[in-house]
Length: 138
Image 1 (tube, rainbow, N blue to C red):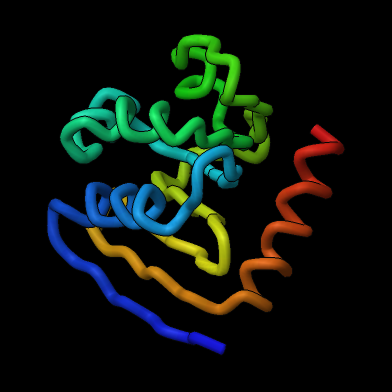
Image 2 (spheres, rainbow, N blue to C red):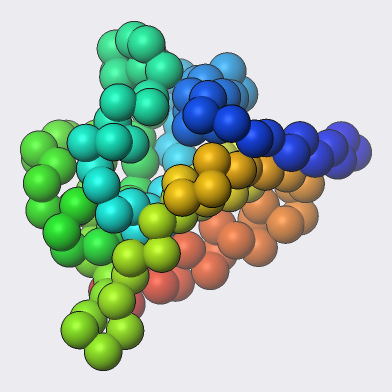
């Protein structure tokens, strides 16, 4: 059972993680994303070249839990479903992204340009279960 951990630093963290998603998911699979970015335009600029086209070519679906500010700016798409988290008492604005895909979980700190990709099927299943439960309740 593969278990690996990659620690990432530098401005290419977002690109590396999203390329990893594309490399490890098969056509039609789903990934799960928590995103509390403070600046959607900045994050979009950090995505790898051709990311959206490659993602769409693989017909990857995604469920997203986002803050209202960023999530409401995203265009409606058939393969993306967004729910919102956060309030004035408990804002969802930590400037982080977490992706759950296949047997992997990736954590990105957008402020510090640090990340971690953890390959552990049991932990990924655990986090997928938590994501789905929260998603249903939002």
